[in-house]
Length: 295
Ligand SMILES: Nc1nc(=O)c2c([nH]1)NC[C@@H]1CN(c3ccc(C(=O)N[C@@H](CCC(=O)O)C(=O)O)cc3)C=[N+]21
Image (cartoon, rainbow, N blue to C red; front, side, top):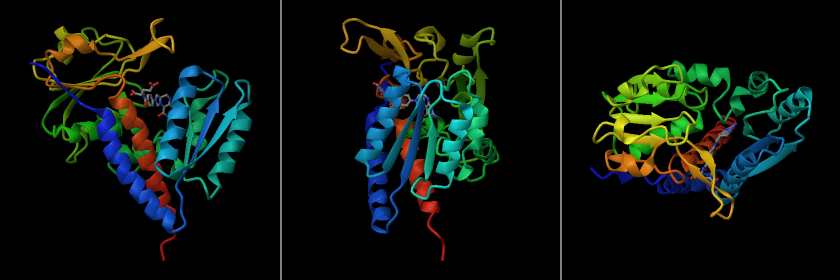
């Protein structure tokens, strides 16, 4: 079987055009959705993600304000900034780019963000509500993956989904969404991780494999059932002197080899990544809509 490529850029563009229209409509009523992006230090990968987020805001009519803090800034400085933004009526979403430097307690920082502005969906209140099936900001990457499956008309319902990776930002919340009692859930979910003895034994049984381990090329064709759907969340930089930037991005999946076995596969770049940013815009728009006083 030769897999069809899931074009994340295209799916993202379709959603973004809806977001752009709704944003314009809201702006006509005097509310411009606003996102504050906080970057601590100058990790090159983080810087490029943050630039991508700001560009996406600009292109779709959202307001973005960016804060660059020194690598050595104190935790209390960061907490003060968050408190200020929690109270800022021009700002509907606050994103603190992760990872943070060692001396800062990320959990503490995430908890300081008002749940009403937690457009990353990382706050315990957001995650708790999500887990309970209540209205919540959904974490952007898992939500984007759900939208990609929807775009190819593959319902997770009754399927066996195997997730490789148990991070708080992808694996854990995605497992939750996929097993949710809902039209976009109802799957049977297995989560594998670094302490799973034989990951291939699980992935080979999967109708849908989601690779989110952060290990380049770890998912090979021998780990995939013929006709499975393969979603690659990995964004790994590998050195490549033939590229302008000096590196290229590769996923956790051996794309070429797995393509001849899967029914659908996401590329890296151009798969999950563009969806992550799109769902961030989506959450910021929803937050702005909720800020309208109901009369
Ligand atoms: N608070 C926080 N929220 C995040 O959402 C968050 C974070 N911290 N820390 C890092 C990860 C990673 N992440 C990506 C977003 C977009 C692409 C993306 O657009 N990738 C493009 C390629 C971009 C390029 O070429 O460099 C693609 O896959 O096509 C990738 C990765 C968000 N993250």
